[in-house]
Image: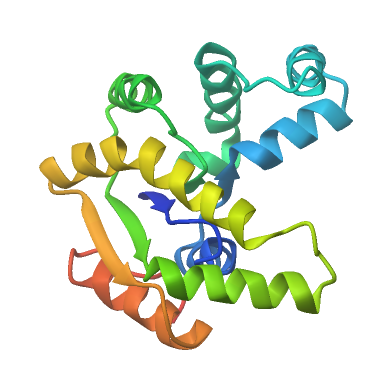
Length: 196
């Protein structure tokens, strides 16, 4: 059983690495964004509540996010482990996740943090915005998202570092290079892949 969390600034390639991690470790990705979208699409009771909040332009509150994650973690495919992406985002969510896992006799095995030079990421995102015609993705907007990430995520990273769970990986280089670094870092902690 492998229980992981992946964090990294916007544009570092977290989604790509998450896909490779779940394939190699035989675990599902649990992304709050995906959970929100699936519940909204399926018009579940939780989804209708989330839609009303999102449509109003507000952030989904911790309590509702926790409820959705709890529901998703109770599904059969998450029984053998998971990779959390986009959760927890607040210190309250960290505490909630700790209590939820410990109530089942579990805990996180590691927190993979993809690290990259901010200027390099901004350059990468600007290039991608131009290539994809996303001209509203200005340098200022990209920089703002980097600031928000740093402000909101730093306390969580510090908490996981203090617990010895943080695995920091250089997020720059080719996709394959970064993937290999992630696998090597996890193997050094005794977390082995189910498929090589």
